[in-house]
Image (cartoon, rainbow, N blue to C red; front, side, top):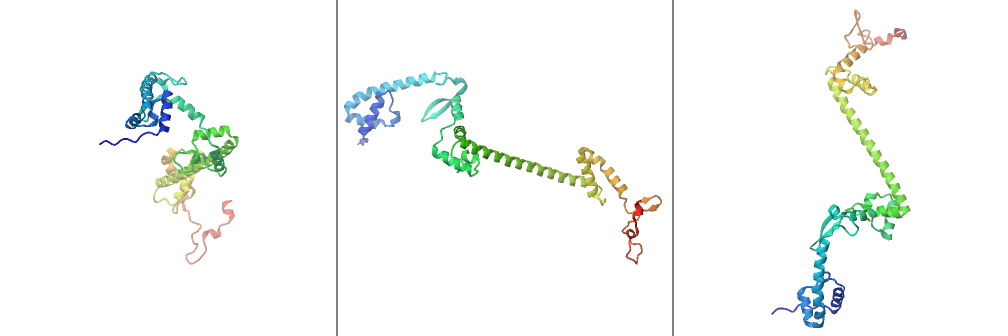
Length: 279
């Protein structure tokens, strides 16, 4: 034996009748066919009026679907051929206008006064704008387009937001130049070891030659691409200025000023040099 479905309440049936008389369908009420039929059996006078209205309104709804399908522009005059977007809503395909969506987003949504108070307090604490508007953050209070509308309509919030933006810009510039300086230092360090590796392995004064090369690079006297070809000339210039231990000066060997004068004494050659030596 089939169970009798639970009947509709008279209050809901009354609301359904008002909607039917206004030309609407019963779709928004979510009433099942068995439940409606059960109510019709117990309320035949209701069925006499509601039945024809249900059929009439269903036909009118189908006609409206066909007429909407044939529309070429939205209600604001934007052509569907350019801005149409199809969305699924409760099992039905609905056409929407992307231009209308863009204009609504550009205008921004209204912000409740309670939310404005929270936004103001957060800006005064120095909170970033992204922390207030970025989706997925626990500190989010409103959407970005709504925040822009709040700035347009509230001068105090606009002033606070401008201060936060200026502070963020300063921090961003500082971070950017710090990264540039660090990158430059890394490149210089890399250049230092690359140039040092170009010098002969037995050459004792590598740092002096590398410093000379860097000075010419900074002043523009030497091009970066010419370093490898000219590194030997820098070594030769350094040896000429600071001759090695066995270099010849005329017919005599150059002696170190740090060399001891006598093997059994503590005196060095430099101790006997006077200023007249360089006169």
